[in-house]
Image (tube, rainbow, N blue to C red):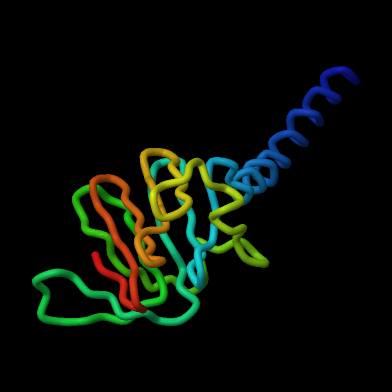
Length: 149
């Protein structure tokens, strides 16, 4: 009887602790690469989703679009959807205290500067300090204070 009670207690304790263990693992998200470039804090997730938080709202322009948006985030999360701004209440692509620089997580050095490739996505420093990310057949880039998609 004591033995059965101990087993039941152990199973109950494990079941109670499971949500805490899995929550901690999800928050740590070891399958994500975080980095910063200038005033951008970016992340590439394990499924190739790529996004950046901007330090201030930036002008977003699309080719052939008769309008301009201002946003503080940009993401590529679906192969059938262009890179697009998001309007999350927080900064989902920024670690508490800020992201490490691209130089510290780079996977290679391109013609104009470092780049990081992960999960089928690539973000890189380009000509004259431009910054570009590609993933899922989509892209966005920044130069001169304007983000283009």
